[in-house]
Length: 625
Image (cartoon, rainbow, N blue to C red; front, top):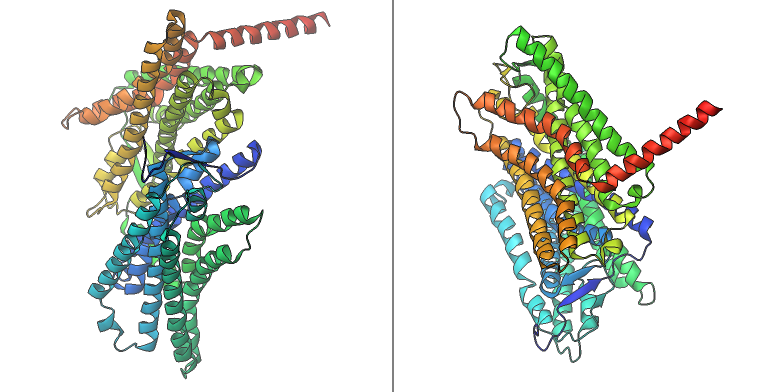
């Protein structure tokens, strides 16, 4: 099928960075950290502006919060795809996906130029026309300016990108970049290109030059106005106000200019990648730091946010009611969960030792993931059971405010990490069964370790901001949590109104993680099921289903219990049912999972047999000596 005007190319190959496996792993870990920090920093700025009623009315901070949202979108247009290509080094991207990324990336860059100009205009009016500033840059005018920046930014490149996509691409299809950039795309288009490259360059140059000149002229007037001021302190305050914006402008336009100034040659492609990486990934990380480190109002608002919430919160500790049973029942529960906890740690530790000690299993991605999953299960059960055993021994159930939120964060972060690991294990089985020939290259040891690092990193980082926001709510009493752990439901029920959007934000994050990972697992095993049904060999089909059945059982236990908790209707027994279900997926499933994985897994049983024989042999030798 042809795409566009005589185009036979249906996909492109992004070459990305020409480094070895270890270099790819280091880049993956580094940019996962950069991406997570960028999202967190910019999200914090947005939250500060939204929560502070004073800053939320100032045009400068309305623009800044929109700029932070823009930076989050801008870095998300390139980095997730780059991380995917670093993990799976094939870089295949469909024709339409490539042009969609091209359009979004350039539209967001264009919008950034307009926002930098709008922020320059705001400073020009504030410093050069202070008396007329409140009327000229009112809230309504500021919101109109924001809307104009977003609309113009996304409309500007619509026609050029459509024209480029209609060019003829008849091969080759290799793009020497980590993003769908117009330079390499034009190089792949078959002549004649006509007026399209000239049109595109005019669109790019006109925006960059016009906004840059506007910013330069604005700050020239600002500088002249500040120099003429009689007050030295006023002059210094004015320069301090605009210096952060000038630093951001220098970073952005400097890197864009550096990309076009660099001479063509053998190293031009690599230089372009580095510069593009800088202004698309590194500058969104640096910009929040630049705006906040020298901005007293932002720092004061952040401090105020923490102090105000602390001041309103009269609760210094919570009381966990735990299980409403008599003393004898508490003793039985204590004995039962002590045994469960000990067995869970022992089982998962044995799996880790088997994988580490067996040289065959230690090289297989399936067992690298399984060993990490067992480590996760040990941490997950430790986040709740020791505290529960303590409360069963001493009936007061008192837990400090900070300890409660630490348990809340650790428990949900580990649960989130479990969702990611179950998805990673589903991906591993999908690749092994549906793409067996490519599997060793796609899921190499380095790729597997990178996938493990991504699961741990995203799982631990995802709930940082929501938990902090919930901890900043006002708790003025009562302080009794009808649960055996610090669960968000009872905690939010104790918060004094208004709680604003915090509860909604938390539920959105929880639901999105559960639904996204569950759908990914279902789709993966849907493809696996279709592939196995089509398999000609009956034995191969049986072996394939046996391989994935244990993972499906674990997925069913985890997601089934979580779904059951949300499906329970509110009523008198809701708290009791919630406790039982939470207890099941936080304590019982980590006990059952090692048994499920090992009972039907011949490789694990064989490795355990080899390990036992090796230990017996060593023991006999030592006895002879």
